[in-house]
Length: 117
Image 1: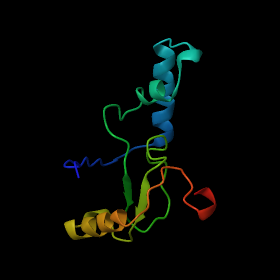
Image 2 (image 1 turned 90 degrees about the vertical axis):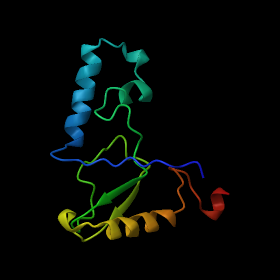
Image 3 (image 1 turned 60 degrees about the vertical axis):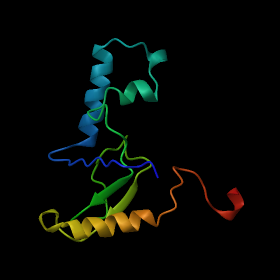
């Protein structure tokens, strides 16, 4: 495999709705005509410009919700929930999450049911 790099992002005091509103305001400030606004243009106005969309989102602390984390960028991300609190999230816990992720059949929004094949 040619995958030899990992990007890790931490969200502290982050709000996905706020990020989307700021992106819209930047687009308005840049005076981009409505007919030129597409997914690529919008993504370039988000906080995460230059970062890849996450393949895996790990939610610590036992909550089974995303809490508005990267609502645009994580649309095709795999989600991993763990009861372990972030301060106690060790390299071993990360290995568990990555092992779980490695077993997944990523469809990126597609349907893998027998009917779809």
